[in-house]
Amino acid sequence: MDIINDIFEQDHIISQLIFVISILAMILFVRFLIFWSVTRRTKENPDRKQAIRYFLNWITFYGIILFLFYYFADTSWMLRPLYSLGSTNITLSLLLVIFLILSLAYQVSKVVTSLFMPRVYDRYQLDRGIQFTFNRISHYIIMILAILISISTVGIDLSALTVFASVLGVGIGFGLQNIASNFISGIILLFERPIKVGDRVIVNEIIGDIEQINMRATIIKSIDNEHIIVPNSYFLEEHVINRSYSDPTMRVVVPIGVAYGTDPEKVRELLIQVGHEEYTSTESVLLDPEPFVNFIGFGDSSLDFELFIWISNPNDIIRVKTNINFRIHHILKENQIEIPFPQRDLHLRSVDASVYEKWKK
Image 1 (cartoon, helix red, strand yellow):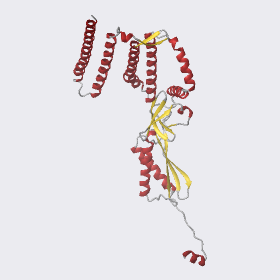
Image 2 (spheres, rainbow, N blue to C red):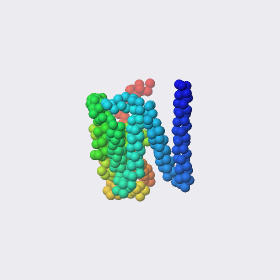
Image 3 (spheres, rainbow, N blue to C red):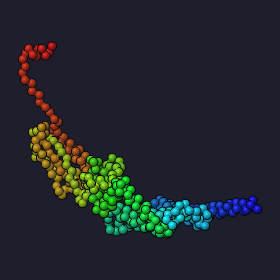
Image 4 (cartoon, one colour):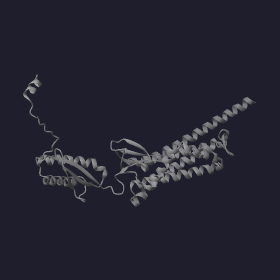
């Protein structure tokens, strides 16, 4: 009798597996048909094709998970308690529900920030930094709501978490001080906005652009294409230069020295000409304020000047400086104006002939 029961039980398991595999194969086949029928009309639009593939993969994945969940919902291994939290028994079924809610919330967050929010940004012409701030705030709100919904859905008593919260509070107070500080600093950065995504900053003499402001750290992409991870608290506690803060207009200073005997008025005229020539070739160079030549003074080997030029985009400072240096070298060479190098005159005092002869030997 036991043998017969075992045979029937094995047949039942095999039939279940065959049924499950058939349903999964049917779901994948339907996904293939939908993708083929829709994308054959959009062969010339790869972006749309990629979006359709992503959406269908997302629907297929959750469809398979939901089917498996409801099909095996009453099985013993799905309802077996793994551990207890207060009066609630945590089972594999409850964990799967929490996973579905959180993962669905994450996907909803991606859809909101990538499809819905950009239309709002374009309508109100918001800058890149504000866009990043709103995206982060929307993501945090959606995920916090998802966590609260998942806890209430599975029936976990929040009072059972008080002990865990107390231990966590002690841990934050002692071992997680830096993490908590950087998290709070990140929230302050998102709202107060002393820096924002897209700003050009100088940190420890490294020039770079703010790429992301995350929960713990800010990612800076240097002009050498290196990514620097800086704790958020650094921007509230240390000296940081933000070239894009408030007004992105900044002054470019190019020093130049010419030989003694050169007409300073001629040098000023040529340097002003260089500024105007750069204005015609570089969009970010401004003529308001006008280029200005500062006569610094009389150096050891040269007459020292500085050319001041204003630009509207701080990201162009290196390119503008390079162009101006080339133009200055070319125009000074054309006008036969010498760029001197440091020189020293050596004067020898007369020496006694006997000493000279002794030195020669």
